[in-house]
Image (cartoon, rainbow, N blue to C red):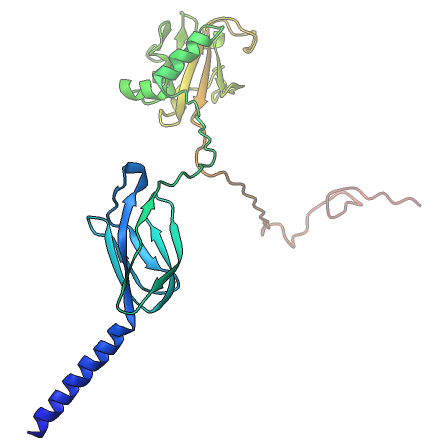
Length: 282
């Protein structure tokens, strides 16, 4: 019997507290619409009471409802791509619903300047064709893209794909229009390239693998940028440029020859530590 009385007492207290709390709160409700689209309901817009954790999201019909304690609030309406709307001095009364209907408009943000930089690469066939059209000299070029299609493994194989250039068995370098090594010249990125063999004027082209090559240019005519000893052709090897982050490195190292330190060697009279002669005038 005593347990039932206590149970009824707690239930009555709970209902009384709930009634008192509901009497001290009210609601903010309304409709959010899209003003740029004939005031169609705006679904999933966020509605919040500024300075509190109270808020809601509009339903599919654009409606929202927030229960809040009695007081005066600033209602904030936000939506992606829309301008934020703040409505101040919205009074919430106990037991009443305050209606706040809000139209929202699209946000027009000013974009910052965008710079697009296009870097020309001579590896593609299209770039070489366009360069050939604009060139004032006749230069035949083969790029990395074409080398890959033809299965070329080095610069020597690349030049043999150009008309007028041939390679004979047992001969180290190529022939251009029947003229051998002594009548041709080789450059690397436009700079003269020395030979690796004293018996030949030009370096062996099979040193340069296709993975290093951007283009191989063959110039068979006389121009001001090639040497006068060139009667066959100038073969210019353009290597692929470095890409990625620019970096600068600096290193410093020292060394000691353990076979000479502390040993006594014959030297010139008057020689100093740095090998210079010290003159003594008497």
